[in-house]
Image (cartoon, rainbow, N blue to C red; front, top):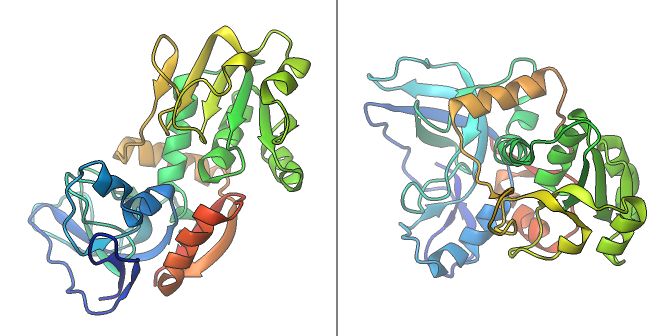
Length: 310
């Protein structure tokens, strides 16, 4: 079986073509993966960051979080899925050890987590790029509890999570402000950003020039500690972050995506009714997935890098 793996601590990710096909436990489903995408979590695994945090690894570690595909086999105790069903989800980075991933021709998941029916009428390539970033964006916007007319500052709006979060925020009636490069302006305005700010300027001052009283909420997708944009916030502003930048206190929430069926079905409904679109900047074949990770880490992105698996 073909898969993208890290074979030992410190090794570069690469294509393996000799892995055994998985054998499902009684409550597991084998999925033939057709599509996926690149996420920062995989750079954290490949770069040894999670190992440095003390998380146990079982090598070879298969990379990849998102997947969309078709059920190949359902074990005896599985009741909700059958061979031929189109499904999607994302694989946790550690469950509880770092080992399983979605950049493989075949993967196993349990029917209790990481799987839901794929949204009908949505191309599998788009579906495969949606789960982790989409659920992260939904969870963050939920935490911010936006109301009509709220001003929201989004740091990292052009990336995978940001490009989805700004759509959800605009749909909630928020005025979205986002620091960005000049080449991002048209892209972000199409997604619903009202005010595009120069990323090279004094962000807090640029915000205050437009919203003198400060913004009602902040979504920080860039920093790993709180405080970077505090001068742009109202005293009672809500803050959310999946990178640990929300800090602590009332209205501050560090979010984490959960691949529950409920979350996946909710995301699927947004894709079906086109409330949410998944911007795909580029598509890579499975063997090129390490190149996608390098591009994600080293290049400026607009949306997602998709992976065509099979």
